[in-house]
Amino acid sequence: MSKTNESQLQVRALIEQYVVLQNYAESLQRDLNTVIGALSEIRLAKETINILKAEERSGFEVLISLDRGGNAYIRAPVSKPKNIIINIGAGYYASLDYDRAIEVLSRRETELTKIIQSIQGELNKVLQYMEAIRAKIGELRGQQG
Image (spheres, rainbow, N blue to C red):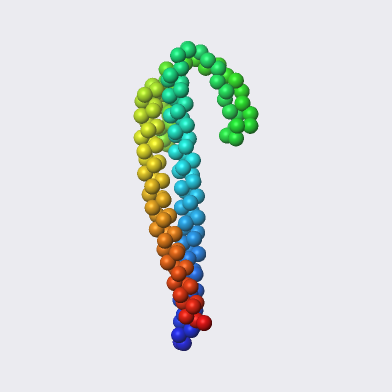
């Protein structure tokens, strides 16, 4: 096999490897976006609980969004709740006081932050490897002519 054919085979193999890594990087980015969205929701829940906790009145009115986009709202009276119902996982919920609810959400926030860091680390490694492959492909193509 000539050196040119061998070089072409190497380039094809590197391109295939690059495409696999590109798909993996896209998957990691989607996962990262999902976890960032979940973290944002946790932080919003904590903020809302803190607002409710600080509310002095026993009854007040709130706006409840009817969709995630904020296109429609209803006004609803709320008596100051003593407990918050928190998703504790696997489809189970628990009625917790304000402080305990914040504690549970804070633990989840910490877990999600660690997951984000892990995904970002993996994504950075993949992107660096993709860059190395791109450079090697350029080098091999430069040698071909």
